[in-house]
Image: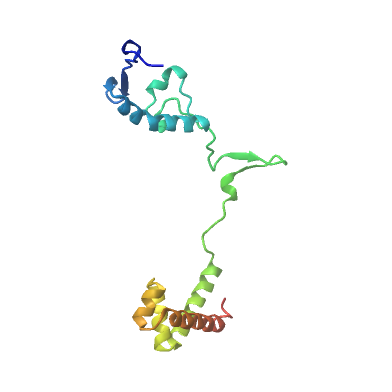
Length: 174
């Protein structure tokens, strides 16, 4: 079925600019480009129970949910949120977080391991020490092999042999 001239939609597209508190006429492409992200943000916030905009106010939504007067907590919970266990004890989720701070014993063990490793690195032959230095610099296998003037396969063989020797010598520290 053909559309006649008098049947064509003469819809006007307007965008509400919140800072200016005014409406601006735009093209259809500009209208959809402006509102597409806003609609997606509002839909996402509504699905998480964060957007409580009344239906009559949805045209005012600018997608800035953090500054919206209709924002709700939704399904976001704080670490301070308390729960009650079966025995009636209250505890927060923050109580279950592990303490990542190292203790004195692990610091001393790490220091002893580093001292032993440093001692063993000093005892290595010059090529082994150079391989370790290049690994510590973050060089790739290809770059290390070309720096040493050997093939990549030869480098990986020597590296694996060197690391095996270091593991055996430092076995009592690991």
